[in-house]
Image (cartoon, rainbow over all chains, first blue to last red; front, side, top):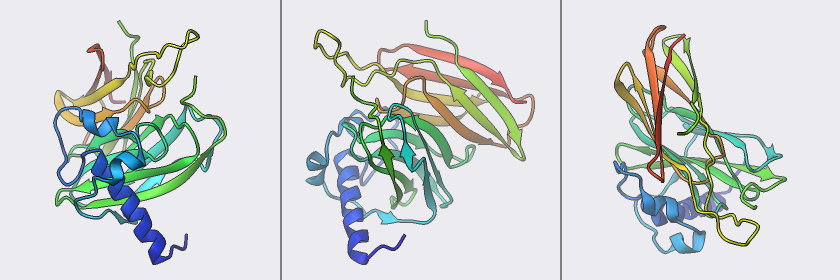
Length: 153
Length: 103
């Protein structure tokens, strides 16, 4: 995919907002379940909390998933990273009421590659975010289109 | 008590691929019932896995993980016969642990 520098910067800023708002920047690796992180509701809420190192798009992080998900209630999504010193991998769904879906703690005993299934309310960008030991943030994104939302009742 | 998990652990080279299927409602707290009342959130918050008793994985989940969650991860250095145990804890404090042998 060709990206202009402007687009790349906008993406980076948007993600910084997301992450900043959910309290994962600049420090991370909380031992307990991070309630504040999982309760972040919207881009508007989180945009004001910009801070920490700017997230950088990275080819060493991959997000996998379908291009089109027929059922938003069950969307298989994977994240992986080949970076050295990854502390945490995260999956974020941009347009969900709670943007953060999952946080995986990475250590020596387990490979930095996880698959799970998420719910998506509507078509949205899905991010895989890798946080390395030196507090740098790398991400990859993929747009997944949903034909039937999974968050309605 | 929740239904048991289905865990499959298979050796693939010098690591083992573990697939876990948990049985859980994963209610988001966003939906409403027929009377218009919000259904309270009920979801798995923490998942941990151990390999022969040593913790290898810690995962935090939010309510946007799909119902009856699936999780796949790779444990380095696991051999056939090793024990993989997976534990989840939900936001009501319920927990369940199941164990599988690497094949």
